Length: 392
Image (tube, rainbow, N blue to C red):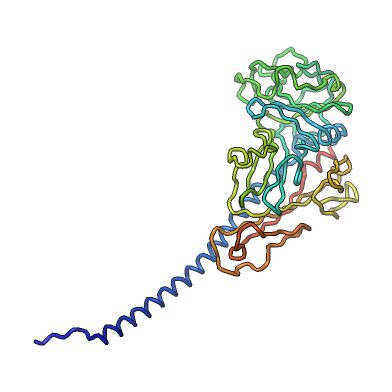
């Protein structure tokens, strides 16, 4: 039986058919892969943006809790002046918060003293405690402060292990923060103490927040904080909650990701810490812009929001007055997340938009920013603790 193979012409025809088939399959795979990348890139931008917004919103809803009230001296001397504190677990251990440095403010946009984030982005600050008493209101009246303990007219709600904010009665004296280590029976763990003052010592004490076990104070400095404690006579004392519950948080976009820093635990003001992931902790990748504005009810306490701006007060570098804080209602924020993968040239032709007056710019965030997908999440957050604090 005679055997025959393929001729050269047949082989060439078969090769051409195979190449055409492979080309068609490749084009189909590229098409569907492009669709897949476009879909998944939009999903990761959406999920990253939603998660980042949730984290920031969660803290902003706490703004002012236990640290803000309608006491004029609290607003003028602490929020509009300076607050000194100490934390042995922090470097540096001494904290000085001042209106033109790192302010002791319940909420702030681009606060002085905190390094800016990526170009065309805002920095957001929020301060809150966790006092069981709740919104601070008027605090309690101080009788005297002898440098080791504070007499008050009502110790209800205070416990050993709480932080307290002492507010003076005259300008020129800083507010100060102490850790309560002992006090009347309702304050200490025995329930039968005879001490008539809220003490802030350096020796170990039984903390109500640690099941009455002995702990070493971390917020009381040997030798004192260097303030004139006589100025606290007839002043006010505010309960900030347990010592690890006072949070002074700053959010910033750094190198295309959302980062979070707690100034009570680390020095957020130091440029040397900007690259330290233990200080500026990454929260969410692919977040390339953050913008914020305050909603102001310029018509007074019972009026609706009619003004949007980036400061509690209206002028550059101004110090908010009692009235300015009284008129603050909400903060609105917008976070823009970018897909991790390229979605194709010309995918985005117009930069993301939001309701604020400051434009979102993506120039410089990445060389070919138009080839990515973006998701903008915008939310308006009521500053309820500030509103309640002004009316309490």
